[in-house]
Image 1 (cartoon, rainbow, N blue to C red):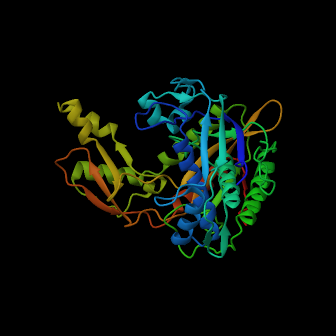
Image 2: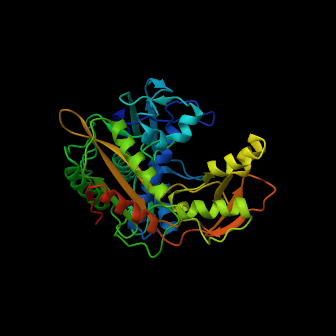
Image 3: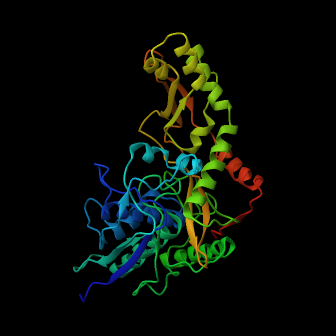
Length: 409
């Protein structure tokens, strides 16, 4: 076999990157990026193979390997970008940004600073791999490289890396079109100057990726257990509004999202009923569709308890509750936000929002766990649909900002 095919990409952080290993130390980690590439490949393949788990697994294994087969494509990261714990500004001036990044800011973790540059390399292994037949398509090594590159396009254009990536963090972009970029794929670096242009560019790019992937598209028969890029179960929108900085874009999204969630008071009143009266009349907690676990804390209950002489730590427990899956630790939000840089002078930024309507939980049940362990947890159903997320997009339109939908056909 000849010299391995290699793709070197110069990357730039668009929003803070909280990326690292188990010790929470911030560092460029190839396994983290590889995991994101796998996710986006699965979404692409799932939208073509009807969400069939067996076919998608075989396709993913042909490109990125599995427990019995190594990946034919290696991922490498290079560079020493600057990191800092101070990337979020003043919480009083940017309350929406702090709302979106709250969990990592509480931990005071370092983040790779927006504007920092580093490099990534995709490279075919220097030894042969057997071709794999998947749903009528034969995946050779050269195909694996092209499909891994397609996954990179999706990661840079739609996704993010690291903590809070679904809330606007972890955005990265290609600084320029890399040499050796596969000719059949859409451009890696964006050329759009407006949200409408970017919506059209993304739609055309997604159409091209489906053609390159080579499988005859089959719509998903039912909500898949994973996120799928198909018009029946996925929607992507560009806010028809631009911002002069990434933090202004995140702050707008966070303030608007927080106001929307506060409007939905029924969940909070149901949880308060459980904490104060020991019973829960609600059959579900609608806000769970925005991601789990979901924590509630009631200042009014806390103030009442401390006013009656209850110790503050005990009062805090009695005023708190967490909604979580019956099995497992959590469920990532089907709704995601991404900050996208646009071409032009001065530089401007847009806001991409999307929803994946995949299966919410395998057993459709959640547990409401009071912070007071002497109280019994209550079982509730997972929301039956995504109507709350639909209302979110209506809420955005109600702010006087139009939405440009990305075509997924």
